[in-house]
Length: 187
Image (cartoon, rainbow, N blue to C red; front, side, top):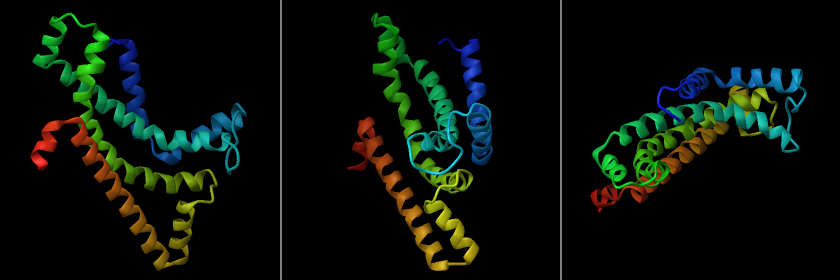
């Protein structure tokens, strides 16, 4: 795909819209299109794999959109570096230049964004569980807010915080595996 081609512009427009749309709007649009209009998927509940398609898409739209935009900009930055020009001058095929040399170096900023997105996904899951009528932890936290069940809320916040901390720790480990300079600074 070429830079600023119609496909590139179309995908970036879609990712911009996907990042800007709130989870509950994406969920309701998916219910209207996939369940009510096309009658392809169930509109709520749990049970079969079909019940998971729309909630997963709803949660994934914003994350995929932001990760794709960041990956594109990071990859464009890396492709302009001198060592990439050197690798291209050696005669490597363009796909190998991107996959073997450019993409690993472009993934470091992308990986650092993934950790904090775990918290966003958990917060979005609360809304998605309500929209798709899922009996899960998000609905439990919403019910705890409504009933002023403070011990349950404290446990929920603690569980979410522990998950975000674990995700950020895994991201730090992953960054150290990708970039040896980070490992050298840590020791």
